[in-house]
Length: 172
Image (cartoon, rainbow, N blue to C red; front, top):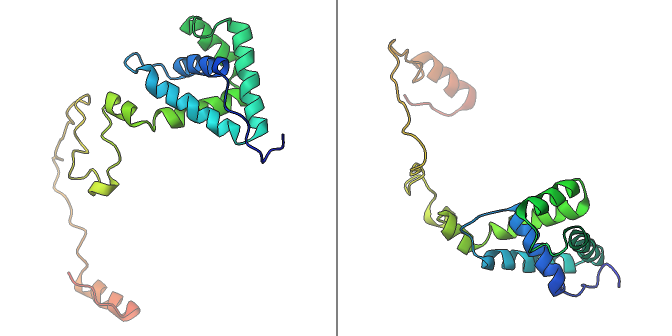
């Protein structure tokens, strides 16, 4: 198979291993299996785009299964320790990046984590609760005791200099 031919999707054993590793990489007790399963399926599709990546994922999943037995039955500590041992390798880098991207791009995860979604279509967060973060303490606002020195607006001589040099009038 050449690099431009897509590879077949991940087999069930590989998907099961990747699911167990995804839960160890990004553990959230309140998240159901659905978002993790979708993230693993999308990771498998990403890997299938290239024979090299597909082989990398299959080999990494096989290594995990060899080291952990059944990764889904292995403890979180065992999966985490195995992942820490792999963190400098290409398998870890690819899986971590793709699972992170696909998991946190899932709308079900947004809802469960309390993220309202992107705001650009609604005009941003400025008037939509950008400061509604109930988990942050109230800010301490203190006024300065000394009087503030006014720096602007531009004085008349500065305004005329600006108009002469740019041709644009400055109003105060």
